[in-house]
Image (tube, rainbow, N blue to C red; front, side, top):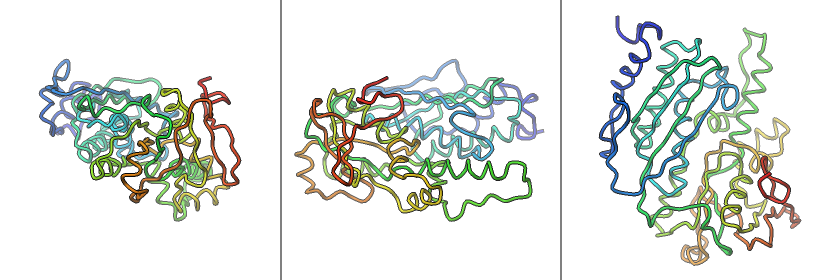
Length: 347
């Protein structure tokens, strides 16, 4: 009997670890020892960047509609985006999973296939895998590590007044995808023979279920020899990311409503769901884009010629100018987000 034909109880925790190890092929020379020992061994000549992401069933994902292969992929993307946000190169991920009794071997295999697919896409190694039992549903923890030269590392706190605020991609689509999935889940509850009706909304569904990282940002930096002055991952909405940057750098910001990038597919889904797309962009989540700032001299260097997929949406201001959203009617309102007070400070 092959390992794939065994149940998880027959295979055992260490058998599962061995199975995953057999599937792994390392890409980076810095990974000297991965799965199969008490710890990984890395050979790192540069500065190391480390982050962790925790995803809980019922809080961050719903297995009713989230395919496990996509979930494994998304878990890696969610973690390594934070490495990219430091202007670093992700090289290793370490995945720990808490498995409930409803997770048979085939489902775990689908999850791992998604993890390995993301690793291949973004050139990182699965350098550690730790499974254990869970009484509270599926739990996924992904620790990512990467490297950067000290001079290349970008922090939130280094944004400066007059810097231009830019964002990659478009915003709000992932939340619209989530609302569509939740709507169909409610409709189909108790109607086993009914097929879900998502309409022509593949774009926002993919934004929610299988997001990608905006690597075009780094092509833009290299091509134009631009050094970002700060950068933040956009995971919990544009407002949260902007406030995190402002709080770290002790600055203000002005962001313009009519400059916030919204995809036509997101607008269509928002109209169908009777949802304000601006709210989705500002206070939604899981768009997995990058908010960054560049100096005014770099802005002059490119002559306001931003490539497709990058939008200038405002500027960094002195702290006393506040953290403001400038509406289409030129009204200034406080930029707010969950977890923050009305003055843009942590609550």
